[in-house]
Amino acid sequence: MFESGLPVWFSRHVGWSMVGSKGGFNRDVAGVLAQRKETEFASLEDMRSRQLQKLVKLLKHAQAHSPYYTDLFRTAGLDPDRVRSVADLQVLPPLSKTDLIAHRDRMVSKRHAVADLSLNSTGGSTGLTVNFYQDRNWLIHQVSGGQFFDGMAGWRKGARKAYLWGAPSDNDRAKEGWKAHLKSVLTNTRLYDSFDMSPARMAQYHAQLTAFRPEVMVCYAGSVHLFAQYLLEQKLQPAYPLKSIVTSAETLTPAMRATIEEAFQVPVFDRYGSREVGAIGAECEVHAGLHVNELDMVVETTQGSDGHGEFLVTNLNNFGMPLIRYRIGDVGQIDAAPCRCGRPGARITRLFGRSSDFFTNAEGRKIHGEYFTHLFYGLEGVARFQLVQETLSQFHLKIVRNMGHWQDRTETFLRDELRKVFGDAMQLQIDYVDSIPSTASGKFRFTISKV
Image (tube, rainbow, N blue to C red; front, side):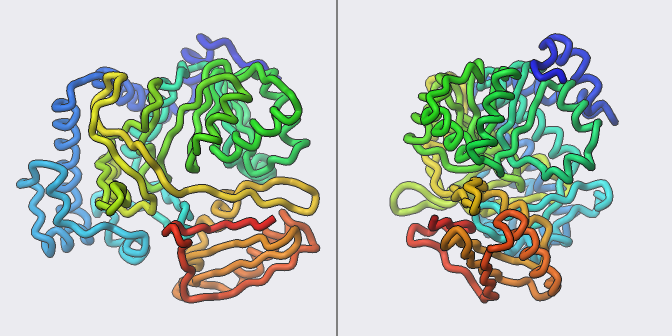
């Protein structure tokens, strides 16, 4: 039903107004989005002035209301009233994922009731399970930022948009029921499960997308690359998307971009972000790096000998649980030179890491590596994990336990969930270890498939 989508005008002015209207959320998102558009081509000085104002406001709030930062600022000698540039943050040590786990409750603002915050979690590219809180202000800016960056890729509010993304399980869909389906129809969006990329499922996606004809597709980079390979092998020429493909969640290589653009005959707009902080950077029509989201973030790099370094990110909107100089676990390179498009600010010109292998079960079904990250979300007893597929039936799972939260039933849960994916013939070896080493390149791989 409604497979071809609603008319753009109706979806934009009627459908979207019926979704997210509680508490004036849509109104607040629209207000922030309007400010973004007004300052899109502002001067660098104006943008940096706005960024600094937001940074000082966040630092003052953290000092006054977050016990962790109250102590940290005192020890480091940081006075928010004397901060004159983002460089002044360098007196603070980076915030690691282990720091976040150890001090999470003390990082939460005393002015925010935990019940009013949203609990989120991630395994990220490191496999280190992290749980954290985000407030309503963060969500408003995150949604408006997503709409703004979608606009850079050619999307109009109300236009048809498809996601090849980490979809909920069939059981979760059944629980969501008609409300989730109605929201999808009203907003002209469709979700296609990137965790199931078997040839049969990709043929189904192709037929459905042909009927839906989205203007823009937002995809896991690895999933849409696999889909593009399938279309080329089958000599299928998709009539979708009409304008562009947005890639995220993994590193997009030049070879992947070329294959995707060959298959779909539309430009690819790459994007970078994380659950902890949101949208960090996005590509414009020039395709010369990812514009750093400087109105929402301060992004620093630790200086490496080869010109690139590890990213440290300060989100400027989450007052419920500030993340200041957060070591996100990715390595890249930032260029301060202006882009030819005329938008101010720095660009991420190289991004290393964050790729997930696809696993293969005995039936030939391809399972995106991010599936296993989602499986570990919320398991506080698992501090770190790595899953290796040795053969179609043999698997090796390494777990670093958080003994303060570990429960023996967690192992039974993991075995049962993996058996659902890989079948009863699965042979799973689980080792409990003290640490899991990184690769020679310095990147940690939480999923490795040798098949």
